[in-house]
Structures are given as C-alpha cells and as structure tokens.
Length: 158
Image (cartoon, rainbow, N blue to C red):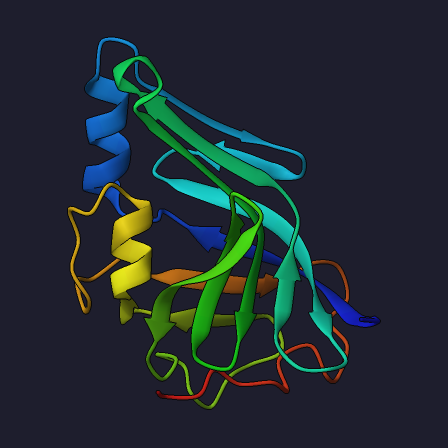
C-alpha cells in the first residue's frame, strides 16, 4: 500500500461517548502512536493510498468500569464510504460516510458531516448506538504540500 500524500484525520467519534467515559470514576481516554487529542477531536496522521482511500496511524483507547469497558481502535481506514478500524485484531466497519460537504473538494481538505454508525460500530462502543446513529463529522486535511491525487479518492455514498 504505497501512499501518495500525507493527510490528517480529525474525528471526535461521538462527543457524548467520550464525555461519558471521562465522567466514569475510573474512566480513561487516550490517544497514542501518532494520534493526539485536541479538545473535542482526535487527530491521526495518515496517508492517501494508491489503492484508494486513506490509512491512519495511531491508537485510541477508552476504558472504565474496572475493565468492563475496554475499547481500542487501531489502524483506522477510510475506504469508499466506510470508516473502519482494527478492534481486537478484527477489522470492523464502524461507520458509513455520506457525500462530503465540500463534494467539489479542494486541494487541502475534505469534510464529511453525515457519519453514521453501523450495527457493528455501535456494538464496539458498548451497544448503546444502533445503526444510523450519527457519529461526529470527520475532516481529512492535507499535511504539507498536497499532491494532485491527495483527494482524488472521494468518499462514495453507500
């Protein structure tokens, strides 16, 4: 999977989920390995893949209830209209993405406001979200000098 342009993913997952975890007596939210927390969003460095889509580095971890809640998202990817992550060694489609808000696109960013959890995605977050429950919007930004192909792969409506 050769890359064609450095990018950054900005995603808050779902603010109410993150807030809930942080309010637990033993709740913990962490971003490591190329992911950082910036207020209400997580930023993950990544790249546009020649095969299409984007792959992102970093690990997001949520825990609480003495380990009963233990969610780790790794190797987040966007392929077509699917946002997926490795969860416990299995790739799971967390959410489906609608057409980007800036469908015409530019050379620096791509924003998708309609991000909807899948049944599997809802299950990852404790089963409290059903299919089509809105997640937070995502933004993908070029880092450094965007290449001509950085945003050539568009999010496709499911």
